[in-house]
Image (cartoon, rainbow, N blue to C red; front, side):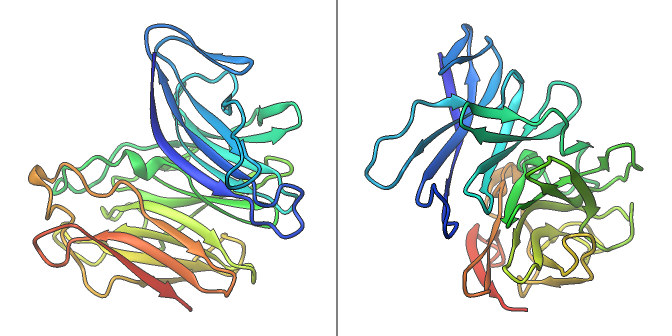
Length: 300
């Protein structure tokens, strides 16, 4: 009766957490012609929801899957982070009216959606017409957390009631997981509405408070064809990103390696290790023949 999509996993590795070692698996459920029941909730026919199940550790049974996204019924894309108290928070996109990103928190009584969205935005598409691949993954929340502040990156042509630009920029929602309040900042620091695109972002944070966001962009190519994988760094909690460096040591055409340029990755990820080193991974076509996966340790 349903299709399951986009499975992801988060492990509670917070020192002192009462749930340390807990494994959270979450995914999107697309319900078909009949309602789909999950725990005490139900997904309406032809609706979708984010669903989660967890285990106290490796080798233990998983809980009965529960709906994360409450009564919202047109959901996709999700990312779970665990705060300093060992409480998981899920971020996901709701397509019911426009596009809104919500936060849901696992409480003793189940998952509870914060009533106010943490971000509202309008993704229209890329300015360049040289790519044909889907960009749905670029509107997905790519989240990291430090203490009780979650950092979720996404791309859009407009945020809130702000000005619309022809290309897609990367934005960061810095969310207080205890209150649900959020602040939105533009990550890429090139000129607004310059016809450039910045896509497939992900965020992470280090113990020293610095925030990193990785993404592709074509700002260095006057022909709007080739991209570099770039990482931006903030030392003021994600408010500004004055340092933005290309991590890929060459540019590349993302249309290489897939017939008709119909697909390119969908996601990248960036993660901070306990040693203070940030690690990035991205899809790369620099050999001019195929799509490969590259990685880089970032120490600046």
